[in-house]
Image (cartoon, rainbow, N blue to C red; front, side):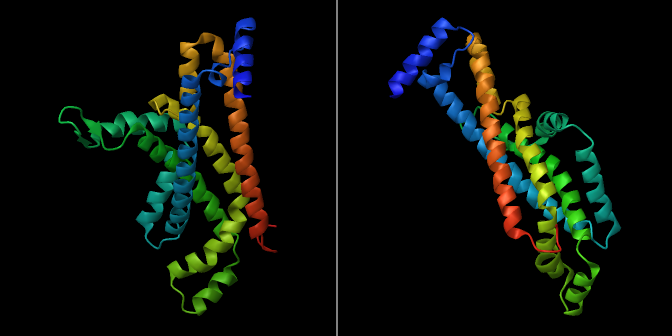
Length: 251
């Protein structure tokens, strides 16, 4: 069966040169696609997790009694929301990357402690995290003040109120907006190509640079993969939203 499929696409490439699905019959190119897909998934999952953590912590810090803490968080939000993520990637990797320490595994080659993949995760997480802070802040403001007052009257600390009362309710309210932001984040991971992160787009571009007839086929695969990835994320988040919905909070 597999051999028949490979033979079909090999013959298709010969009869229709502009539709060379080389990654479907060449094991070397198929391996490159697999590596790129795994990297894309790892990058997406790490960035989603870290950006949510940043959003939760940042929203809590916005309620701090210290003015300088609130101003710091607000400055972070304004910086990352109002500059393009592509520029942020380049800044983190080429500017801040020059100040990161290195180590030499063999005594000759100097390897930076933070690789290009690490910088991509850091940059994209901070980018999406800035939006998540505002998303969670809006969710917190949607929680009735009487709920907070009731928790405070029970002797709960500010951190306990945030952890056990505000955050669970705010999270439910914030899920629709959070869903949109995380979908945008997954799509934005393609920009990591500018710092040579070997994700799916990087591998596909490399393939059609080596085999110019494969360009159309590579872009078709790129489209299909991201439709599937985003579709899975949207369906998963939508189901989660329905399960966590509480009458009176978030509709």
